[in-house]
Image (cartoon, rainbow, N blue to C red; front, side, top):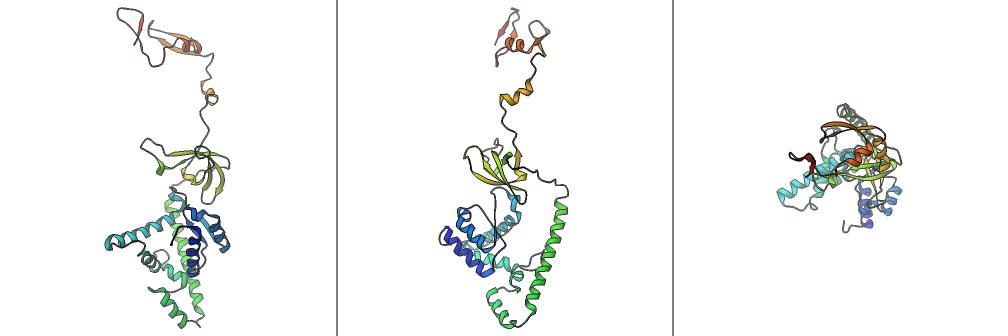
Length: 295
């Protein structure tokens, strides 16, 4: 990309679509270019759906996070060992990933996409088109390869679900209109910061146990998304009205021990409050004086 704006993003994206075809789902972060109405309309016209990653919510889209980690490892090796610029070797990392056979599918992404195994995909694809142009089994073989890969992916997903979700409970569900706090550990300012941010109001339910939220304090009206695992239901502020139910002891006897007389006297709550010493002072009897002294 020559510049970071929506028009340049559309140009690069359409070039990728013309080379590899229209994707079913696009996974991206919440950059302004991706959230612009122009780019969203372009994606909608192509018939694709767009999935935004929420910062700090790694469980929301673990597959994309893992793929980005693999790309970073490849770029780190190239830049660290050869001193190259990451932008100059990005094509090499892309080609390496596309021609590498995956453990689960037993095929490379390039083979499942265009039906060939090649280190130079453009040249080999052109040669194969010329040689097998009249071969009617080409599309059939590609369809069978994709069907087999899909079955292997489902089997792998089933095995991982049995191992990972064996002792995992279902996430807590929230209703539209609930008030919640969100755990954002990445925004904590110190060891004593709990990392909880909010309160937020739940606007709507999203797929994969996610919710769209609206901030009620600070930057009022700011919208974000969060996973259910990072959300805690907020039951309101502790005001005198809500706390009164916990202190309804009027008319009841409170046992208060008198240090001066050395015996316990039952006092009413109002009397005990009036005769109590000020907060932060200690009342002790003096050895030569029976009257207490305030320290």
